[in-house]
Image (cartoon, rainbow, N blue to C red):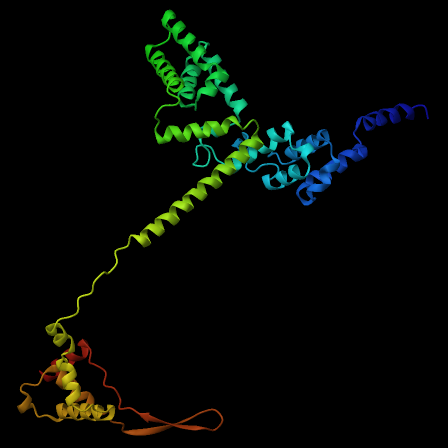
Length: 389
């Protein structure tokens, strides 16, 4: 018995280290069930959740819907659709105002909803509304901080981003980009290490920002006016859910404007269409031409219509006359006449009939054909010629 105890203890140790499958708490099981069927519950039910519990459910939902492997997509992990649709999420937040300001839901779900509904570089997603206002300010400040380094590859990329970035007076004041860029250009000129082409690009960007700040109330092109309106709209979007609402409202307004323009164009086309003001009556000569009966109508009026049977009889008489017409009157007979005459007059001769017995005692009469004469071969022809000689 003593020798068996160590063996029993050795086997019991690894069993104690294993995790029991029933170790999951009841709270985790309830959360898993809720997350799996989150869109099936009415939005009023989530009024029982506090903001922390709601954030936990959204994190678990985002984790459950995460693809196992991949890249790109909405968030760089291969995700092709948000963890929760914007329709369900907006209904829940509308009925539960204490859940409508969660930063976790804004970052994990509303961001994907914006990327899914409004693709970047599209007609419904301008450059000014590519991200919320705080993140836009932070991205420009990050670009300017990157320019202070010595990385040439990063410098070229950052200069391109700064040149293509939307800008207005409010964004210049919030980021301090003008002052920082002026200091960088001054330092680059003193160091004489940076290529002159890069310095010219930065100076051109700085001049465009100065012109924007000085001529903010002057005359502008239609494209600049649209950009400034989008920038004013971007200043009001401090979260991804607000950005989604602004983009949706902008899209609805564009559709309404396009529909209004199409209706106005149709109404203008109907009103500006040339109308017939005066109709000149036809002259006497024109009336005589129009009322004159045609020669075909005259012939049809004078000659009585023939019936179908009379036409058939007439065609039969004409065809019979062609067949019985003599060759002297018709001239030299042609090959077609000979064939037609042969097929019409000659008949195959049947010498007799033979009886053939069938099954069941039946008898059938079959015409017996004349024996067919086989053609003589070359050997037989030679023999006949030799015999004649």
